[in-house]
Image 1: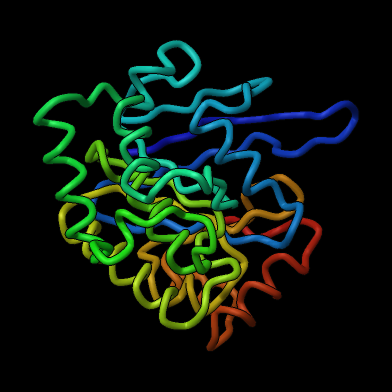
Image 2 (image 1 turned 60 degrees about the vertical axis):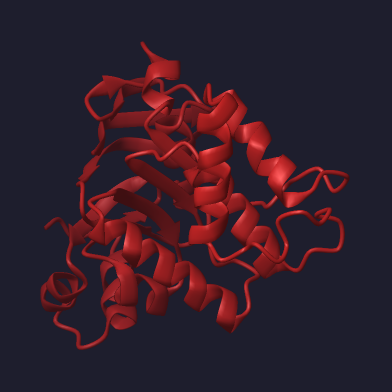
Length: 244
């Protein structure tokens, strides 16, 4: 389970997030939905320890990220917003590097690599250098890096950005399979169809604040709209926001 309580973060005079609180539960997919600049990425970076909050607490399976960052990150997989990788390495070598950072070695390392490569159906690209990989192939490598140590929790920042239809479908399939296994999945997005198709619960963020949260259907009912996109526009269109 992932939880943030009263998180705030400023960059100079700019308030990126202000008193944000929510939780993402095991066996569910939780989405953070908001316009560009709403504070989604800042919140996620605090959660996985890349940024330090000015106030508030972020926890991974009840472990305080600020107090015990290495222990907290051991049960977290991170799928960043950019698929950066060393193009001189093969996909397997790239994944192996991340596995070793999580303490895997010897037979356990080999088994972890074989497992994640098979699960993500990437045997055909595993021993190719990543130079020239398509966005879909890069997505597979990045997801494998996040999952190789079998974390209970997964955080994704706009995971389908730049992906084609087939790659997006593959990623959705993998996320739903992880949910069925009891994993906690949290991702940010501004794509309504993606959120509506995947999420059990949605956190709507605007101007650095949580303005509504609930299931996609609950948000539609809250705003009096039939479709999530219309509900989202109605919710963030108010300076006051709507609290659920």
